[in-house]
Length: 170
Image (cartoon, rainbow, N blue to C red; front, side, top):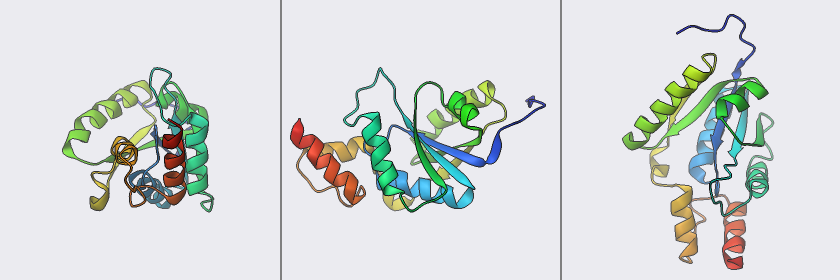
């Protein structure tokens, strides 16, 4: 694979992207572990106009900013469009992706190859999800919360409160 001769992307600056609707302990675990590995992590909160979200992009950004208030090397930003374009814009040389199960691998592998084709100077790094968080996903958390059950063991306290408030409004 040909690398560009002039690489202005920082290999110590990583992005971790997702919809985070809502952010879970699975997400926060991967973000925290990434922040230990990389000098800086930009949490890229996706905003796809074709997708329906429970929380607005501004609300999702705020929830994550509140979770990571004490982390100097974690920044939260909204984005739309292609992740490689966002990475190029912010100068990030790494995309961090989490793998929960074998079923995640095929999709993530294809996305990683597509990103590599679009921008050869951006590396995709895979982190395994912590075993106790394997089944936690935003959609499962929303379903549990919508059923009136406690989600505090799956999401940070501020997220649980925001989720209860949001669902009470619907």
